[in-house]
Amino acid sequence: MFLLTKAFKLRDKVNNDGHEKPFLEHLEDLRVMITRIVATLMISTLLCYFFKDTLMDLLRQPIETVWEQNQQSKLPEEITPDIWEQAKNASHFSASLSEDSKKLYFDQFDTPRLSFYAECAGYYRAARSIEIPEHRITFIDSLPDTSKAVRDQTKKLLKSEPSVQLNAKNNVVYMRSLKPTETFMLSLKLAFFAGLIISFPFILTFALQFIIPGLKENEKKALWPAMIIGFGLFLCGVFFCYFIVLPKALEFFYLYSASMGVENEWRIGEYITFATQFTLIFGLAFELPVVVMTLVKIGLLDYEVMSRTRSYAIVSIFIIAAIITPTGDALTLCMLAGPMTLLYEFCIWFAYFTRKKELKEEAEARATQAPRIAAAPGSLAALEAAECHLDDDDEEDYANDHPLDEGDEFDDGEYECEENTKLDTLRAPYDPNSSPEEDYDHHENHYGEDHFCEEDFNNEHLEEEASLDQESSVDDPQLVDAIAKLEELREKIKALEKNALPAEEPDSSDDADNKN
Image (cartoon, rainbow, N blue to C red; front, top):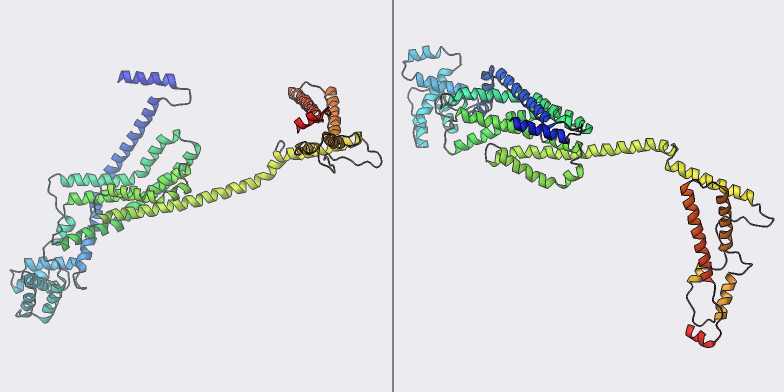
């Protein structure tokens, strides 16, 4: 360990540029974070342990609701499941008592008409022991010394067929423990589960304190709201599972076992494990919007990518749901994958409206800053305006330095000629039937002394620029390069003019034929 510490210190000394935190300090921060999380979980678990009875009742509530709904559907409206359980037990324990003893026995209960329901329960249980259904009705009709109300009520019970077992509620709701230490370990597991839910915001805070120093400013701003929303979504997932999903899943398994002729006598350990895992998985699954929107805020995801890959995301959600659900049935898979798919779709639309809002704000910002940018010195608009102003001043100065004679027309820089220009003449196709004299006359018409062409205009401007260059200082290197380029351009123009002049007239007709 000593050598490993020395190696890490040497590495940090070599690679540290003053901005990066040393590796050992990162490990120290990680140790502090883990210590805080463990201490928080231990304290919250210890506090929740004192309320273990209340927590146990809360976890029993879903299965108790399922059992009561199933029994109420098989009982008459005036008989509740609790009264039915009490009537079966009273009938069983008072069967060997005399009439006076039975009356004294039933007077000890506050339940109204308990003796009547107990009598019906006794006859119903006796009739259910008969295998042939038709013989059950015959047995009830043939009972001596029995009132018509008792016989009618017993016939109703035979049609709905409620449970005949004693302590059926205790077998299903309170369950059984098959190990000496199972109940104690379940109490600790239940306290840890409740402590994890209570301390979840603190755990997120400690985790963010370790992560945030290595993030950028926009990423830090996105994480703190995500922590608050994440805790709210976690609670939503837990409550959604506890009040909606868990009762439906338990009802499905309970009725399926009953339809197969199997009595539901579940172990307390298996039920607590199933309920806690199921609830915790839903709480974590509801964190999907937090993860997705955090990636959107920091720029790793956007609306276009999410909408384009929607089908792949849905398939991935179903695969993840199939892996993390505690059971392998399709019902619980769909109950988990369905809300996750809806939450992902909500993330897509939220990203769309967020992007739309950002674009609107950017457009408003550009519209607000455009006048200031245009008026700022050095901007493109200001430079164009200054250039136009300088061009107007140059034209005005040139007009003042070169006054026009009467009848002359001011040249605006655009060369106009009734005939083709010099380049158009040079580009004209060669006519083999024309004679050299005609070619010479054609060129002479375009380069006559009395004809104004672009050459005179260019030469005049080049002479003016040369005189101005001589008068001005040439200290600027860029100005010196520009003058050199102008000189090269002047030489090229002169060379082009010399090459464009026609050749001398050939002496013999043979040379003309060869040329043709």
